[in-house]
Length: 153
Image (cartoon, rainbow, N blue to C red; front, side, top):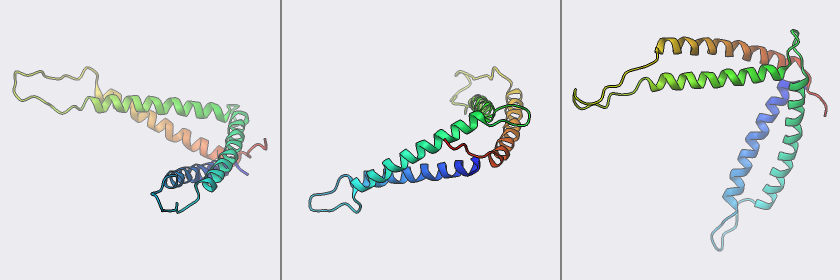
C-alpha cells in the first residue's frame, strides 16, 4: 500500500470514529420504556476495535514519514514539520492583517482614533509568499506520498 492510500484510509477511519461517537452518545440514554435504536455496547466494541486498528495505521504512517527520503536526502518528516511551521506563520500573519481592519467605533471626532503600527502591505506580501511556499511544499509532499510504500510495522 502506498503512503497516500494509508492516509486516505486513516481519514476514513477518523470519520467512522466520529460517527460512532455520535451514535454512542445518541443511544446511551433513553426515556423510561423506550429502547435505544442501536446497542451502545456493540457500538463501543466497534469503536474500540477501530481505534486499535487506526493506532496501528498511524504508527506505520509516522514510521514511514520518518524513514522515507526524498531524492535530495531530506526526510518526509522534515517536509511535514516545515509545512507545520509555514502554516503557523501564515495563521499569525493573517490574524495580524485581519486585526488591522478594525471597524471604527467612534461616535464623535473627540473619541479615540486607532492607527495601524505595522504596514499591512508588508504583512500581505509575507503571507502571499508563505502561501506560495505552502502550495509548492504540498505538491511535493503529495507526490512523495504516492511514491512511497507504507512500512509494514
